[in-house]
Length: 418
Image (cartoon, rainbow, N blue to C red; front, side):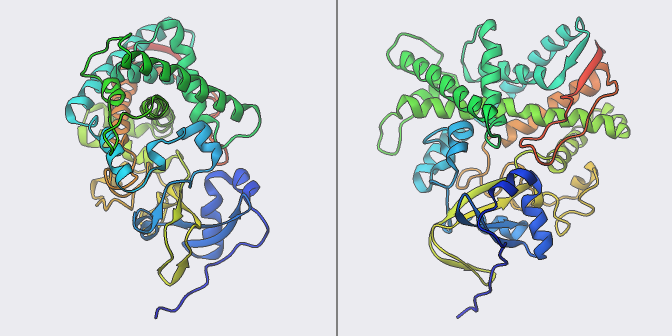
């Protein structure tokens, strides 16, 4: 019988406030203090196990050992995920629902989105030439919202697009906040879900005709394992689970601009339009800068890993940011170096900015390919299609605020097309 080791344990009754105060560094700080890739703490009054690293990711994404149902705290469900979404499903239900998402990630659909996004970038660039200053974060959110709606097959009037963009952004900007910002996120989700449910009902009732070759059509008429249509509220949640993450790519695009500014020698390499180097640069931005700090699951049944006992029902958190900065995985992880990806060997668990494991059978983000392609398009525009100035401003970013974005939101001036 394997000898049970004691998991390093943090003293104290509850450390939820510490998590809010430390943000992305909550798990890395304690792993360093304990000199361990695992420790036990208490969050929201409950025992929680926190893990980091390649081996931890591999066990965390073992669907025989961990479940997602009821793992996410209510504040995330009410803002980020929505009720009954794919993120909270397990087993065959999850696989069947995930297939609905993965069917939209074909080369044809991805290319269609790329064409749409390039057009929206060009439209925005034409507009920016007449503006004294451009707040990149806000402008890019609208570019991506327009792109996502067109790709999904949702028609949104210009006067409504600004509000939809703000509502979708509020969903990913509010989960870790307290007070008015958090409640703004809840209100935004309720509003968009209501509007989306009405849209889906109108399609099913024949009041609104849409093309069969759209994601909206596929989701509206998707049937569950019992051969029954999903209820309109669940369809609305899953459509939002396409729209919201695409708008959230704006965070990464802001960090693209930061990286270009802080590492100007990289721009010279990118001007050559080397497809491989574009990919490496995008991957390094995703690895280096903060995006989503951690993911949660519940232990399915008692098991032992590396001598540590995991009890059924225990909340377990996997450190995404820390794993992407783990010196056991990455050479000089706190240096920005796209070339590290030239010799990189992926194993599904060593690079996890949007989760790890298998796309279909596991809980890795289905939209990861979308993220990479949108970032490559955006990088090409920033490097090869426009000129701009970045005047003195606060380009620093917080490791406490989640999500983190440069404080100035990147103010561009003298924007011109090349």
